[in-house]
Image (cartoon, rainbow over all chains, first blue to last red; front, top):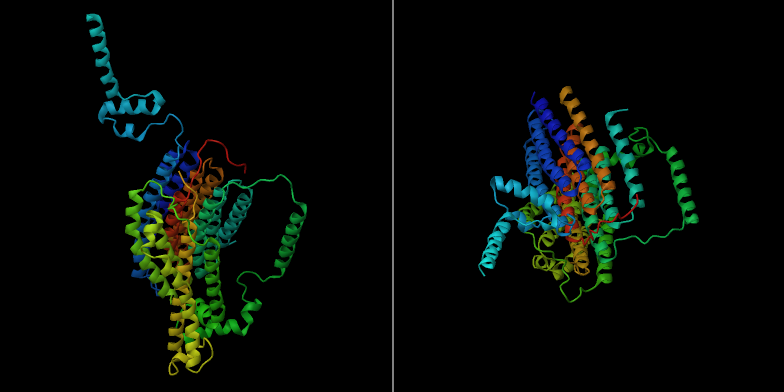
Length: 157
Length: 325
Length: 98
């Protein structure tokens, strides 16, 4: 009985990996592909390992699938949990620094300084569509009082 | 066809497709990446054909260290293939002819796993399969064949690894004076991840070394894993900082030490009254214990040599890069 | 030993993993930039780890898990090594014809 549950979890994990691979083929640019592939890779692999652990508990063998197998599976699982995200991060960082994002893509510092909340959403959309002339809303609101000061001082003089 | 043979067929087809693609790629980085996939497919095929030790070695050496070293070679030379437009007729003809002769010769081979094949009738195979546990009390027959029945051969292989390391040291010599260390801007995530993983990799390498008697493993695979741990340390920091953990002088002395250990076990057997590498002589009342001790020591020698050779080759390549942005 | 239903489910999952591996190979051929290829090889490696584990259960040998663990390690080290020893020039031009 546990064998069937274990193999169903394993099957679920492989379907998630399959979604990741379909995303690898169909998504338009590199960063989207990395996002899809890396996340589904980790989750799918972890589900497969959990399924295999459950499967092992369901086996009763004279050949003794024993505790050592479970320990090895858990260590593979922990290892994949730690290294898949690190590899995805390293890949994306290296590609970003090499200029794979092309012209007009936003700077990391601008993205980090975006405000949260509803203004942040509008700002984020403008940032991602805006290209090289994008200036953040705070900087724009800083420029306007300067302009109005100049006008006032101009009129007064 | 059974399920396993269907999967095996699919893998072979994939292997052929990847091989053709490697031949046609212009960019050498792409070719190296595809050859990593090729080695992985080979390792999966070995697993499907139940050859577990070979799959282990292929996964560790072919898909891991080989790809890393080839990437470093590409860094030292150029990464575009020089392209010529002429078709060379005579070499093509020779290659096609050799391929055709090989295909013709495979008609004569027995089917895979055929119990009536000639190799299964021979007395040597019979002795290996039936007598190996009585001779040495070690369950893994691959290890006993490698280290005891064919011990000379393995001594030669270890010497080959030593020679390869010496050749690289002679060719690449001393590093340039400046720190051409290919350091990118340091990435703290990789550094922390590597620090978490390296102790467990080393522990697993020790496990593989001494568990080779009971499962897949042994000296070659364990040496590669040890070297992989040090290479990960070098990759996550700088190579110079990794050399504080394993300095070149020490690694240089370790390379022949493994071969020396192997040959010294053989000489010890002679001194105790047997032939060279006859481990039965190490413990005359219990020959199986003698075999076990002898196999343990020679696998240790193999592991030491393979580890230090891989690490030395990595050091020599890593300290000679071009200047990197 | 193994339940026949569970055995069938394991067969289906093996086929799924192999299809995933084939899709990753297609991306490794097609990828316009080198980073796509590195991503594809990384994914292929993780799928090989899972495949070796499942094949171990199908053929009844727990010893395969050692190979899976080694392969997971080597995959990681290879990806990090590629990213350290690369100076790809990412000008957007097609590099090769396959």
